[in-house]
Amino acid sequence: MKVCAVVVTYNRKELLGECLTSLLNQTRAVDEIVVVDNASTDGTYEYVKSNDLLKDNVTYLELNANVGGAGGFYKGMRYSYSVGCDYAWIMDDDTIPTPTALQELLNATETIGEKFSFLASSVFGPNNEAMNVPSVDQSPSSNGNSDWYKYLSKSIVRINGASFVSLLIPRDVITKCGYPCKDYFIWGDDTEYTMRIIKDYGPSYYVGKSIVIHKRVVSKPVSVKNEQNPVRIKMFYYFMRNNLVTRKAYNGRLHCYATSALYFTTIFSVLFHSNKKWMRIKTIIRAINDFNFKRYDSKSFKNRYKLDGQERGLKIESKLIHQANQD
Image (cartoon, rainbow, N blue to C red; front, side):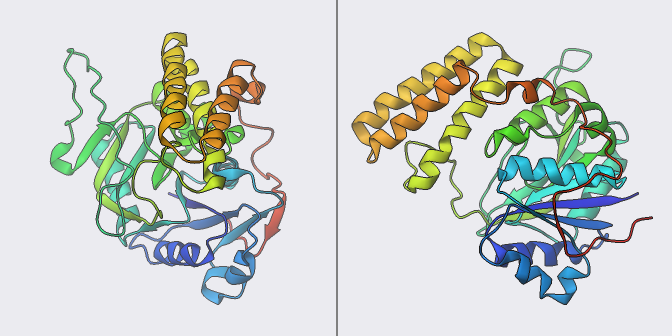
């Protein structure tokens, strides 16, 4: 069984180093570690290259342009699929798995004993605070009752989605359901992808014994209304546009209209209570308009279930510091 860890990074070389070191110290060794560098400008490439431990144990893909987290996971999962990995274990560079994180995920596959779309680790912040908490899947089982607690004695709970912070995804899922939507760039790609693979492949589970630390700067939920960084305020365009695309695809037009109405309500809230109000309002209006007029790669979204081209022997447009030996 071959497990490939896929780590997407951008301008956080120290965190990346900590993430990679934790991956190399797993009690169940990772078969290959793939770093997708989104054209970092802080010397990440040189940092990894100068570290003998990292450069000799990591497949490093340095992209020619920043394609966002969504594009990074798209590239990384394509690579893991192309080299025949049985599982892709995906995460951002600020995810620090504890030593038994992978082993507990693999133990859970045996406990469940049936097909699943993904397994998610239990995520905590640096101060042991709750982070990236998924919702419990309370959909009815064959007799009409919810069975989310079926494996509760083994610290496993059925969930209805998750963020890309330590997910174990079987190869067959990728074969049937494709890769994350690269056009999402940032935010919402994990929501759309996990909804897609649950819907079309099988249930997903939260594994309480598989623990990772998420060293995100802000542990609270993100909000265009409260964000103070001007760069991140503008990035909320993707948050809202992508959410509308996903809502329409999986929840229908009425739910999509309700989400749009919520965003218009946010405009009035911002108008009376926020600084940088015009930047926030322009971001919200642009997201809604671009969704309504399909000013995004709608063709790519429609084709998201398809694998692009011949995956084995895939050519990656990037630098390779080191490529792990293949069987």
